[in-house]
Length: 147
Image (cartoon, rainbow, N blue to C red; front, side, top):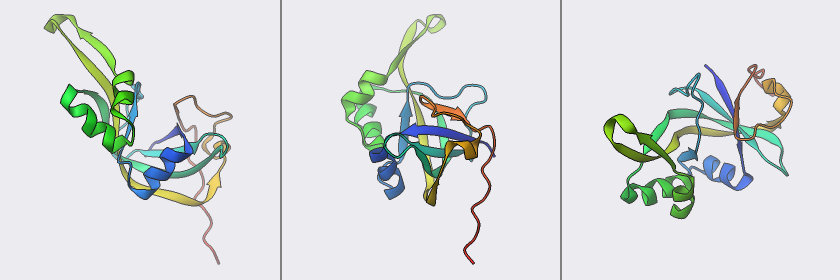
């Protein structure tokens, strides 16, 4: 199993842990290696928290072409305004098909859990916070069980 460390604002992390936010949108997703169902995502909350506060499982992930009528639905799942989704769509041109598509990276969130104690990035082999995401260079040790 692989772990991707994802930078996220505190408010969005709270919505993930509560189950309200069921999708994460990104303009760019990891391509090589690509995210796969079952991969883990460690949630690094940006300042003022500046720690990994929990994790989730990837349900599915990929670049999706969105039609205008789909934008409000995906925005609701991601807990963002539809205008935000429209701003972050990337236009991709398919010359061989004589068409273009508005695309965005979508990660379906499964089994989110908050850690009892937040972890530093160094537990994942990272020296600094990722701008958006970074693959963990090592897996953190399992937390010790209470005696």
